[in-house]
Image (cartoon, rainbow, N blue to C red; front, side, top):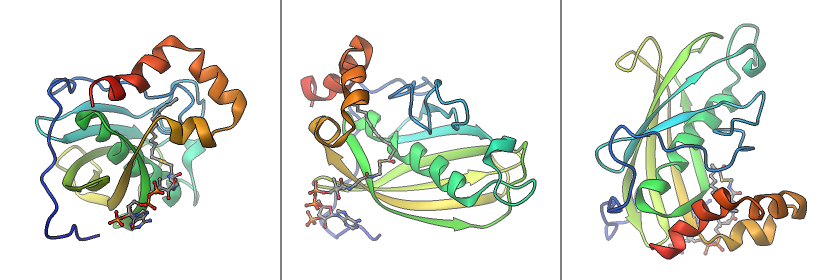
Length: 187
Ligand SMILES: CCCCCCCCCCCCCC(=O)SCCNC(=O)CCNC(=O)[C@H](O)C(C)(C)COP(=O)(O)OP(=O)(O)OC[C@H]1O[C@@H](n2cnc3c(N)ncnc32)[C@H](O)[C@@H]1OP(=O)(O)O
């Protein structure tokens, strides 16, 4: 997960959401950020000053692994979604290629996980990212941390591979199409 020596610093797109602004869900049925997913994480991600974001995730009983504790895969998903949303600040659509998670402390049900993520480097289509999840407040102890490699893709990644009925529904939704195409109009 070490970026190559020729990798560049991430560049914030001039039309990126202002610092503090909510990014909004990229797809209402996304398990990470979609409002239409009853058991989803309902992450609300906020733009930072640079190519960085913050988010909060409240662990609910539907997210348990062991009794009273968050499932590790769910925590990885929260980190993944938070890091994936960094693409919006660069006007790139990215998907996860590789994700590594350290589980440092158990996370009880009812906890608010305070997430932060940033891009560490960009090398062509490869976007290197890092994230932490803290408990007890935004400055509390780290409970989970991750590094991930995201790969830039085009809208065709989804239209070529996604199940037809969901793709048709997404393409029929003008807001969804506008969001996806914004990245192609303003590359
Ligand atoms: C309607 C539209 C709505 C849009 C909504 C927005 C949705 C956002 C969703 C966000 C949801 C949240 C997030 C989610 O959950 S995203 C969902 C989970 N992720 C996926 O489903 C991705 C599945 N994988 C793929 O589709 C392909 O493998 C991709 C596209 C990733 C690359 O295949 P592609 O054929 O395109 O490219 P390439 O193979 O030439 O690779 C390119 C470079 O990358 C390097 N590399 C690749 N993989 C790895 C790896 N594992 N470790 C290390 N390196 C890796 C590779 O060596 C090469 O490097 P270099 O040789 O150039 O140096």
